[in-house]
Length: 185
Image 1: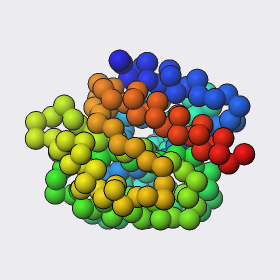
Image 2: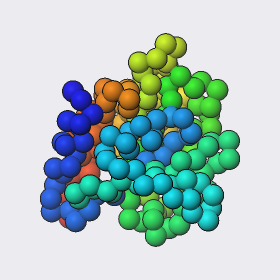
Image 3: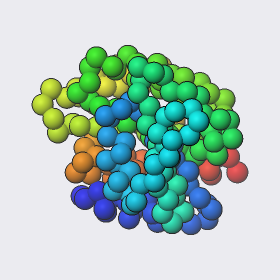
C-alpha cells in the first residue's frame, strides 16, 4: 500500500464533518515532515514561541505539526488550538532509545490536557524499516501507553518514508473518530 493510497483514503473521511483537524507532534527527526509531505504542499511558519509549525490542508482535513525538540519540551499550544483538535498523531522514532523517556513525558502531558480530552491518540512507531528499531511493543512500553486508560489510543508500526503501516493507522484513526462522534451524539 502506497502513502498516496493512505492519503486518498483519509481524504474521503466522513464528509459530514466540516474539517478534520489532526495535531501531529513528536520529537525532531521522528518523521513528521516526511509524513506531512505525502499529504501535499507543506507550509512552514515560525510563530512567536520559536517552534516551526508545518501545516497541510487538503479537502476536509487540516494537519498541523509542531516541530519540537523534546530536549526543549514542547511549549504548550494555546487552548483555542487544542480545543479544535479531533485527533493526535504522535510520531516517534523507533530507533531512538535514548529519548523514549522524553517522548513518554510529552505524551503524558498531552493526554492529560483538558482541552484534548475528546481527542483520540494514534502513535506511529516510525522507522520500523531501520536496523535496531524497537518493536511496536517495546515502543508502547517505553511510552507508558498502558497507563493511558482514559483516552482511546492505538500504536502502529510505520515507515513514513514509504507509507508502510500508515494506512492501517489512519484506518484506526478514522474508525476511532467516527466512534467518538457517534458516542457524543
